[in-house]
Length: 135
Image 1 (tube, rainbow, N blue to C red):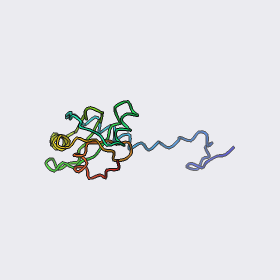
Image 2: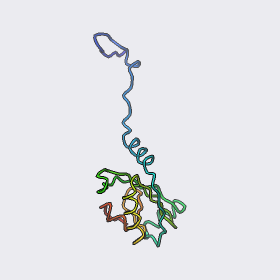
Image 3: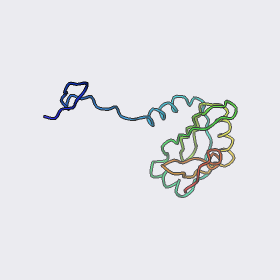
Image 4: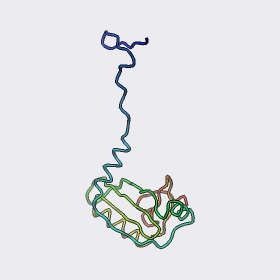
């Protein structure tokens, strides 16, 4: 039987406590969903062919897109969650300033685009997030 040395006494390996899992990403995503209290809805004009293909494959909706955005008025990092669908996009934020900015940009140009990792956002919000459009 294999044993491990632990503080000058031998403990069988099958009785050792396993290391905890590293689930920091899941903890952060849950925190972002809980803190995003301010909500707005924006109508969608159209979608790029790739974004439309993803939305049709998922029965008209897509997984949420989560972002950390710096608010220049609050001087803090804030949460921004975007729930895309074929007819409208729901935008949730933990800060009213970020929500107002994202809603104004999404209203100006609400064509849905694909930015990677199953994330679909309006074109207007892409400039605010400083991400690259893939399709």
